[in-house]
Length: 236
Image (cartoon, rainbow, N blue to C red; front, side, top):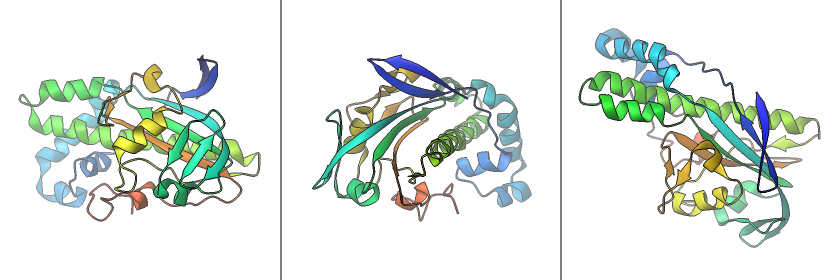
């Protein structure tokens, strides 16, 4: 469910009351493990994942902010919004060309689970790994739900939403992309902030942009990631 909040004269959407829908296998993949191997050979890892699935969701505080920005012009390697903010670089232009509007989004599951893993690491490392494995697909699941909401919202206008584009690709590094996304909305209302190096805190957060227009590129987020060939949690 979305609620609208106002800050600095901007209206944004905040996703609340999100229901987690994950399995033990999602947690194992979030740890970088092969669920099939764990089920057959590593019962202790499976037990930790089962416990995390029961106890972990209570430590998750999901929230997402989105804001639509109208595109004023596409100029060279810049997409300039009506308020003067811009997304820059050849990677952005390649994947966001033709956008009429751009939605900036920040999704987070909060810091409580992250704090718990820090406190439990030396006491129960297997369980700590399982909680961290829960956090990874949880924030991904949240981002997918937000993307679905965006796509559904613009269908009434006969527009399409593109695939989400996140900083982290060598052609759009976090130190470049994150400040650009943060300039399009105010994620401090979710408790998320940005370090000088472009990293988000809380760490279990994700930011992205989605373009809105008549014919948008559709591809999975993993297609744009530099780790798409080696990541154990990539989408098939």
